[in-house]
Length: 315
Image 1: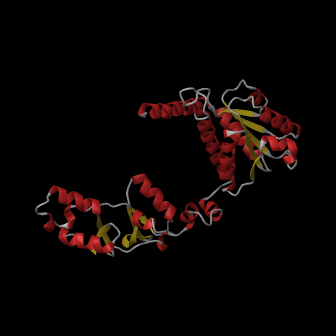
Image 2: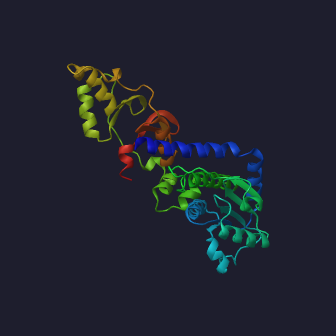
Image 3: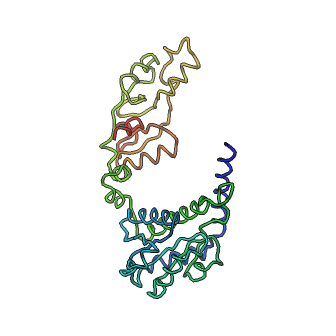
């Protein structure tokens, strides 16, 4: 079973790498040109599993504050195509490039002089050959043993769709402030905008000669998983629960009297209090840490507090 699961992942990774190899500089430039010329709405359409991918991409673009809509290819032929105008831009997803509903929609879009960008598995299918731009965003080999389940193909379409979303965001000068305003009840939005200084926790501050027996007591009383070493005006180090546990493991008989300076992290990761919670989350992920020391913006040694993953769970 493990090999089956692992092999399916390998096949999808291979499909993504193949897609990346086939994307040319010229295609990227044409894509950006079409995006820049679009002044109406951005349309995404697909049938079946491709339709689900189109839905997701549309939702992502809407979160940027950009006018985007999902158009069901079948419903389009029964009136939903009515509002579309020549200044719109359409993205059509069809792995085979021979989906009848997509071909019918593409014909109607051409009649309205709406540019179409297609996401298919090759450049020789019917949909691709009628597009203003075709991007390889599919696969002829799926990740199941029978190569019939939409897996590698939908993964490619999703990744290409996300790349397109990023390109559109760049063109519209998207910012995390806009994202936060469009997600007033979501953790992503809240974190993007929430000032870090409003989310800080105080922790015990000890001196460098404090024995680990007292450090343990301070850790237990602080409930933040760490203590700081130095003073409010001069940060000298950081001790986490992990640091203490490792010290005890190395010297289980005599750890109690070891001074804090021997196990502290001398250069803990810091961030000034002008940043946001989103900034702190990204920095923690980048360095694979659970705690960031927050310092005053005009004094990198003056301790303002800490932001930890322990506290993040309470937000």
